[in-house]
Length: 428
Image 1 (cartoon, rainbow, N blue to C red):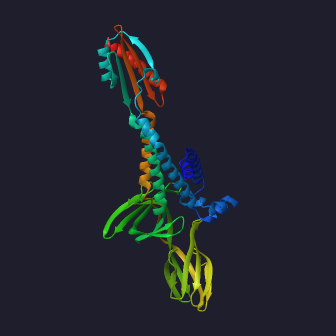
Image 2 (cartoon, rainbow, N blue to C red; image 1 turned 180 degrees about the horizontal axis):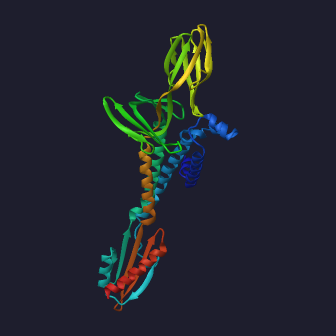
Image 3 (cartoon, rainbow, N blue to C red; image 1 turned 90 degrees about the vertical axis):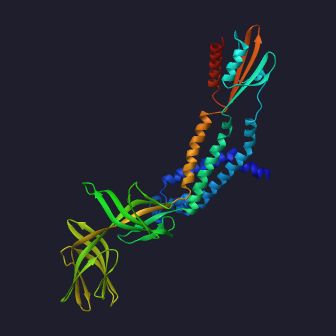
């Protein structure tokens, strides 16, 4: 049992796990996450099979990545528990009362008054720990709580890891498609296509798109309404300006253009005018069905690829309709049928939002803030212990000062020299 605990509390294991996690995290930023398997097969060839097999395409939600995080979490806890008694011992360490053992010691005999020198040191924050007729030992402790700063950083790392695990288990990331005027609470997850139903609804009231002079999209904005058990409020969602509600964030990700074509259907003496779009198949006279598969504009003319279904005879025909040309003609039992594209009646937009819920994100942010503060605490406020010894010698004072510090010993020596110089100036 002891060997197992020693292994999992090893600093070497912690370093190896940290480097492995850092390496695979870099890999996760290089390889796009959450794409369909075909994307990896096409882009990476044979490596695509390995990427999908080992879930590198969705690495941060994979079982092996969570396992590595869990082992690193265990190592950090055991390592902290193992070394805490040593740190506590250093914190409670008794002061050195032998002047010959003062660390970074400086010795000087000065023509000063003992009483004045003693009062000076007391004002500087030193405390008397031992005194007899001619000898006085002083000590001054500074930043002693900094001995525990490393455990603050350890705790912050635990928060980051726990936040990441919590987000992976309870959170999700997916897309929501908004049709104008239709409330929805359906989110389709990127990693599994699994549907998530939110406890409230989002309705698209209006979608606005702005273009650059060359015709490329400049900005797209969704004006939405949130519907939550009788409570409603409006919100504008644009790029870099998401909607956040009940722990769920909605980002403007994309849009889709839905054209509405005005078409004319002619069969013998019978003529009908209809509106065709790509959302729902068009029913014509309860006999035929027309689907708009694709639409576009070329050389100034609008065109559409359609699928015509003769529902009575169960026959299908595919072809193109072009604005102003009776191009699409199909045979039916009741004679030839022509479909003529008269023009574009209207254009509607579908807004596509990226939806994320990460209940652990607060812990992650809090952890990173504490890590920064903890590292600053370690490097800029190290624990210091100052020592001073006074002895009266023939109307003069023998002064020995020293200090212990974990890092920056040269700077501490300069501090001691400044202390002696200040002492000479104040106690003459």
